Amino acid sequence: MSSDVDNLPLQAAVAAEPTRPHKARPWRSRRSFDMQRPTLAGLVGRYLLLVLLVVLSVGPFLWQLSTSLKSQDEDIYAFPPKLVPEHPTLHNYTDVARLVPVLDYAWHSLLIASATVVSQVVFATLAGYALGCLRFRGKRVVVALLLSTLLLPGEVTLTSQFLIIKNMGLANSLLGVYLPGVIGAVNVLLMMTACRAIPSDVLDAAIVDGASTWQRIRHVVWPNVRGMASVVGLFSFIGAWDDFLWPLIVLSDPAKYTLTVGMSFLHSTMGTDPRQVAAGTMIALIPIIVIFASMQRYFFKGVESGAVKG
Image (cartoon, rainbow, N blue to C red; front, side, top):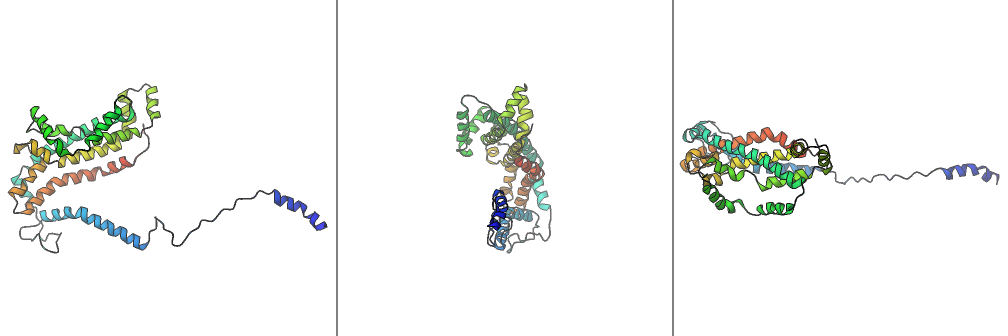
């Protein structure tokens, strides 16, 4: 009895001590899948998939580049194919430049593409701000009309566009080639989505501070949507530079051709020599590669930036 009485204070102290929750050890299995550390089979599969994508995407470009640099005494249809020319030469490029006014055609394409980028970015930003940040009657109808235009392929509206350009007296002119590409529904929807990501509290605070509409667009909206604007600008330039069907329909004077239309005639004038055709293709493709390589830092940085600025 005495021992039990002596242990009463100790038992009371143990009972009064708060119990700590038991932390279960995380269960780990040796066979558990870790995304950061894939298995050997998964790693091999990833690299095989990357190699396949590189071959499918870069392979045709390398083939055209190799063909354009090969001399006349080399067999371009040899199997297995040889990507490295035995006797590389630039004679094919000089032939193309001698027979086709490449600089004039490239200047026409550059004018149209640059004007398209400016108008697409400016008008798409303004329209995206109106549809994404403002409230007005008929807003849903406008968005529905923009979405409905995406359901129709561009070839369906070529006839109506050409009749409009012809009645305006702009047929066979670079301005007639440029006008249908002033603004695109896809770019408006992209900018509208970017403007919707801006918190309404930020715009309301700018209104309370007395900022006008242009000040809100310049100091609040533009810093937050310029990443998407870079996407719109880059895709607009590529689309205007690579456009072939619409300039071919509008232009009838060979002196006003764009680069893609002018290079297409190499298939008829030099159809028996695919080396010159490949050289013309590379001349039309190299500017796109240079622009994308120089702008890709801003392109991906702008797309990934999601913080609110201003």
